[in-house]
Every structure is written in structure tokens, then in C-alpha cells.
Amino acid sequence: MTEPTSPHTTAPTVGLTTHSLPREDRIGNQQLATVEVTGWIKGDDQAALDAAWSKVGGQGPIPLRDGTSVSLGMYMGNYSFSAAGSAFFFGNISFKNLTPDFPASNFDGGNTWLSLVMQCDKEADEQACSTIGAGLIPASPPAMCIAYGSSTKCNSIGKVGLSSSPSTVMAAMESDSWGPAPFIAGFSNVFSPNYPQGVDLSLVQLKFSDSTVVSGNEWFSLATTW
Image (cartoon, rainbow, N blue to C red; front, top):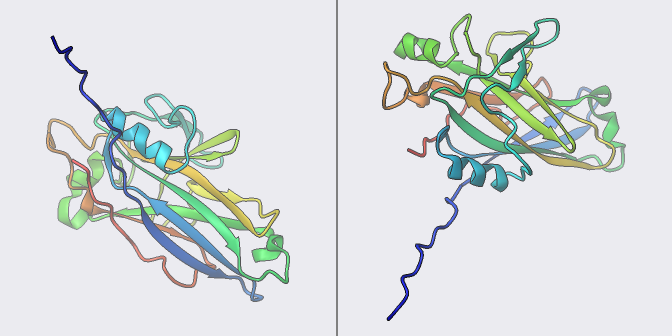
């Protein structure tokens, strides 16, 4: 009699899209920032979340989950992220010095950073933008956590038009390359009674940018995986 075999399961396939951001400071130091990102993943699809975190180089537990303390920025305090009806995307970021005859730490006076900012098409669906925390005064703002080796920083994602964004990646350029450092970003209430099939996340556009980026920092949207 042949024994029944247990079903074979495989980890979900996770694809990455690459964004290359050449940078140059005011005295000619050059750098390349590279960002890889997944598509949107439902917050209740634990297998896909785990696969995505591993794909971008994450180790250990996923840092952004229900109840995670998230900073609103300097002097603004913290809030607890809500994973209710959530959707996430994952990525990693790295920097490379393109002026090797000069120390990488010289770039922009020693400042190597990029901010993640967002905008939502309120003219197309203002209620949807407000529901997912992309309105003017969100109850639970979208959040981003980035893993810096043994420490993790979690900040809210800034909106276009703000003078600065809390969701900023800071890199200490002690050599000609840094990273890749993995990150996760999440939005609450993508799925709700008003949007049981999910908010149309093509309304949300994202950008990694700062004043030194010379090209490649166009707005982009992410595909959904459901």
C-alpha cells in the first residue's frame, strides 16, 4: 500500500523593481543610490510577507507590525501603527561613491540620505486617500521601518509639499559603498467595509529623493499582488 505524500509547498515568488538615482553635490562629488522595491502585499498574507522580507535582505522578524511605535518626526512624538486591513511593500537601498579619488564621506558635506515621500490622487478619490492615511491629518499615517544592522528605525512617510520627511534613510559612508539596507513600508485600512476589495493603490505615488538627485527620481506606483 502506497503511503500518502504530504503536499509540497514553496515560498511565494517575489519580484523586485530597481530604481537608479545618480546624485551630485554642489562641488562635484558623485554618488549612485539604488533602490529595489516589491509590489504591494496584503497584510494578512504572512507567507508572502516573510518571502518579501527575505528577498530584500531582511533578517529576523518583520519590524513593522500592529502596535509598532512609529515616529512622526522631530518634536512630533510617536504613534502605534495599525495593521488593520493593511498592505505593505518591501525594498532595500544602497549607495556607491562614483568619485573614488575623493573620500565617500565628502559627499554633500558628509550627508548621505534619501527621503521617501508620497502623494495620493485626491481628485480621483479623496475618500480613498483619506482612508489609507494619505489625507491632511491621518489617524494612522503610513509608516516605513529600515533596518540598520542591529538597529531599526520606524518613521511616518511624509507627503509631497512638506519641507522634510521623517521617512529618511541615513547612511554613514565609511567606504565607497553602503548597504543594501532592507526596509518595509505599510499603509493601514487599505481593506475596509467601504473598500472590501481594497483601495485602488495606483492612486498612491512614491518617490525617493533629495536635492542632490540629478535623474531617476520620478514618481512611481507599485503593482498589487492580489
